[in-house]
Image (cartoon, one colour):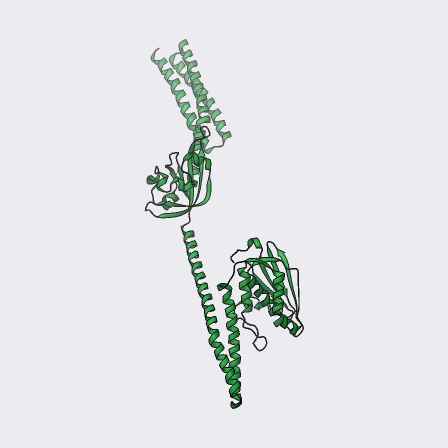
Length: 468
């Protein structure tokens, strides 16, 4: 083979290599930026151009070399090698490069999502070492990415604390967990409460564990808020208990000296009434009246304090029997005013019998007291409401303006002077306290001159706390 023949062969080989590289490069570019139908078109174009170029080089080389029979054979071989190379390039571009590009793009997209997550994400290998950790995990735990990769997960939180199991086989059987509170240990040794979720990826062929994905959110601020709320609730409960105890002791201890003061005033009035002028008699009378009001106020305050200090455990309570006792207590008042009390069939509930009796007596007593001259007509209604009982006590009394509907349940709040309607303003505050202790609410609907209807809910037996 002379020099010209060798040159022809080299030309043919170079043509095949160049077109192979061109096919691969073009296919890769188009796989990234082009639509699949355009990729297929370009591959066909490249194949045709390769064939054309190989034939062109072969003919040109043959002409230059004087075209011998051997050269014709070499040209045919070169043509076949070039066509085959082109076909391989196209198939390689179709089967590997596009797939590789797609995988690379998908991986970059996934890494972007992981990197931008606000929650921490840690992926573990089968030997429970950290393979992947996003920026949030590094920032929360105080590690750099280089430090945390390859670290045993037990350094941050042991497997048995994370998943509640001790081995990987138990872990696979247990399956994923979510929304559980766990504690991570940071680089500086500080403990970080997190809301944790974890899942296990297994190998389809072997059934063994491939990886563990741990996602967690920092709940430090939430835990601080919960602890502060518990502390404030406990402080408030102590304060209320101390206040109730003080009210009970104060009102109880005040009764004895008050009785003495009133008794001495009454003794002074009876013995020296004839020796006193009109002013003296008036002064003593006012003092005795003031003492009586003070005694009533202390008695009511003591009743209010007893709601907490002498509260009893809840027991089954027959409201029909309870209402009979209340009407017996109010019998004289009912006869004097001509009041008529009617009622629906009353249920049995679970509660503090003494307090419920006080509730009904206060509300019925108010309905009798706040009348407009006509005989009071009072009806007690009851109806089931979900799992509660809804009670209503309707009267035909003086009523009130709706703007006072909340104020009347506050302690010592009165809408009328003592000369019009006696009382201390504690009765409805006691009623509200009793209803709330039984897990319900109380409210009133009223219009001035049209009577009032007091509503209250008491929870059903299965919903009421047995201790109140």
